[in-house]
Amino acid sequence: MKALNKTLLASAVVSLFSASAFAGDVVSVYGKLNVTAQKIDTSSADETKIQSNASRLGVKGFYDLGNDLEAFYTIEYEVDVSSDDKDNFEARNQFIGLRGGFGTVMVGRNDTVTKKSQGKIDLFNDLDGDIKKLFKGDNRLAQTVTYYTPSFSGFKFGATYVAEGDSKQKATYLKDDKTYMYEGDGFGVTAMYGDSKLKKSKVFASVAYDSDVAGYDILRATVQGKIGALKLGGMFQQQESIKIGSESTNGYVLSAAYTIDKTTLKLQRQDMEDKGDSWSVGADYKLAKPTKVFAFYTTRQYEGESVDSNYYGVGIEHKF
Image 1 (cartoon, rainbow, N blue to C red):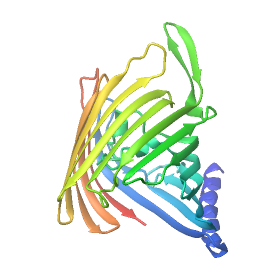
Image 2: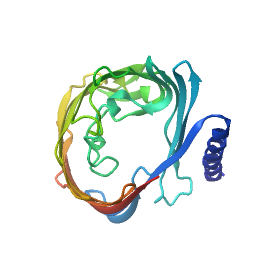
Image 3: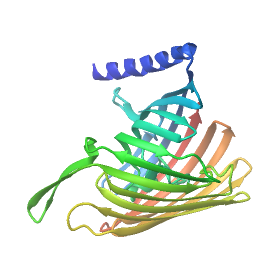
């Protein structure tokens, strides 16, 4: 029954928003299917599998309110197309907002400004080489208010407030045989320069800070640039749990991508103190603007483990 309800819900959402276009809303249905066949070899698993990598279905739209003011919205679900469970929908970004000369404000489930500040530096995003495997801070939280300023000569600023009612703002933990509980609201701020897709500018740079967001304080600095067909990027991150007695740890990401005609070659290195390090290599081949095939290899060494975790995969992605 639960699976049926979610399926009906997704169908109803798409139908509702498609129909609403006739009432004045400008609405689009969009999505992405990304599926890999891969081999996993870790200390706890040795298997081959078909894996869905953040495949999704969504609707988004906007309505002109006049006086340089616009309402907009997004309802997006992740669809695990490789799951044995028919109940394979999971909420992603789902928010409503207003934008105009003052900037953009959004309320609901959304990526925090710290997550957005990374731009496109993570060349293996959503795959097993994703930087979130070693870094904290890639948060999509339910009870948020996010604001972005207009662009000022290429500079943009943003802030996210996370209400203490969000489940990730509450937790209990043990230390020295005592039970502690933390709860409260959190916030994040960022300053960014340039275009994260490197289409309108040759450089993208950002700095972001989270305070008490999902249990961590985080400082993150990112820069990515383009020289001809070569893209180079780097990120520094300092993270610290808000648990009593925790200490901050430092990490970095370095990435490089080189495009030759329809092929993009990728290399990425990541390290986080007291957590682990990883290498990823891969190649994408564009079949058409919305479609690519790709291959990747990631090896990760977790702190304290004597066996590396290895991931090999080939896949296909289509956006619509």
